[in-house]
Image (spheres, rainbow, N blue to C red):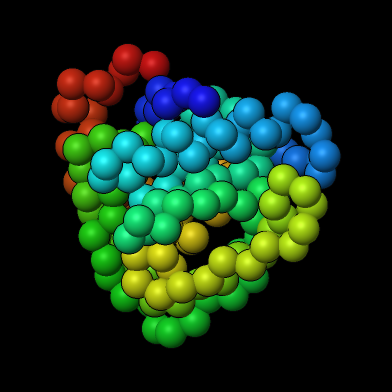
Length: 166
C-alpha cells in the first residue's frame, strides 16, 4: 500500500476520460489499496484514480471517517436545487471557489469482486460523489464555475507556486 502523489492541474491525465475496469483484474486490487491509503491523508474527501496517474474508472472517499471505494461509478441521480458550495480539489491545491452542486447524489458501480455497489448521500458526500465522478469523466471542478469566477480562478491559479510544474 502506498500513498501516491496527486497529479496537478495541467497534467493531461486529468483531462482524459478513464477506462472502465474489468471485474477480476488482479492489478486493480493494488490500485484500490493505493486509492484508500491516499485518501486517508487528513483533509482529503476523495481521490480519483486519474489524480494518481491511473486512467481507470475508480475512486476512494473519506467522509466523516467513512472510508471506501467504488469501481466503474456512474452518477445515476442528483436531486434538490443546485446550490453554491465552496469547493476545492487536491489537483488544484490551495484554492476554493464557489461552484453549483446538487445537495443529493447517488452513484452505482461495483466492488473488487464485481458485486454491485451503491453510494449516496447529501452534503459533503453528495459533493464528493459529483466531484470524483467528474474527475473520471476528465473534468475538473473549475470547469463548472460561473464564467467570471472561472476567469478570476484561472488568474489566481496561474500565480500559484505549483503552476507550470507539470
